[in-house]
Amino acid sequence: MGKTKIEWTHRPGTIGCSWNPIKLKGGGFGCTKVSPGCTNCYAERMSARFWKTPPYDGRKREFVVDESLHWRKPRTAFVCSMTDLFHRDVTDHQIATIFRRMVQSHIYDPDLGRIVPRHTFIILTKRPERMINLIPELAGLHDIGAFDNIWLGVSVENPDYYWRISDLRQTPAVVRIVSLEPLLAPVPDLNVNGINSVFLGCESGPYRRPMELDWARDVAQQCKRAGVNLFIKQLPINGRVSHDPSEWPEDLRIRQLPKGANDGAE
Image (cartoon, rainbow, N blue to C red; front, top):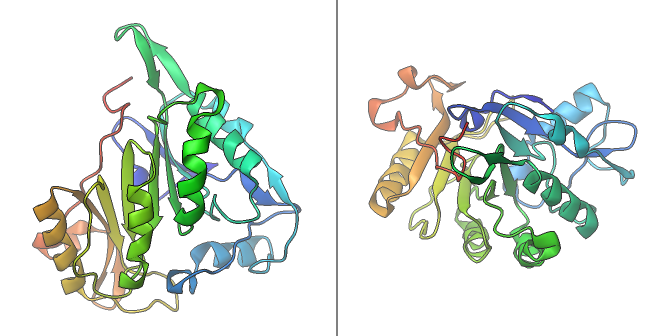
């Protein structure tokens, strides 16, 4: 776990961080490519650089979940930022244990007289076909309930993967997110009914593929019409990737975050 520069975790009153409870034995992380958005995966580059890890070598996965129990100050954690929680090699039992740890972060608020979430956990997947089957089952385990501090989302890079949004819409969640990063094509007729927030960003890295600002404008208009929050993370400006909204066109300086059950709680 460590603090992260990913801006959509920087919510007021919380520490933005990443949490990777699934690691490869001996170091590094592993995953497999399932769609064009995976082509220039930043996690693959980092694993190869720091742990000399091949893209995927079938090594046994280690399971490290207890560190989240020691967080005292409220956090917004990007879960499995270096892999996919719903990868085929992560067992149902491991996923259930991770969900259990996330739910255990609730605390009693004497002012409200009830149990409230201390931390918020954000999960993004390109494998919602597995998530849609597991989440209802997990909700029935150990009286876990509605996962009020767990935000579920899917990554969609072009219209060929709109089906992921349909799967997400059918998955029980208090907050649903669609991540359009990297956005690799225009996404007209984006159906965000039942979605709370959209994250959007161009691709980064040495082999990044182009993105047009008009694609972002079209997403912004669609989200506004649907009443869905939009957080623009990064845009291509003058041939480079910019995280600074002051450098962007004024109509694209949009950084709206969804509100979770613990917003405003101490």
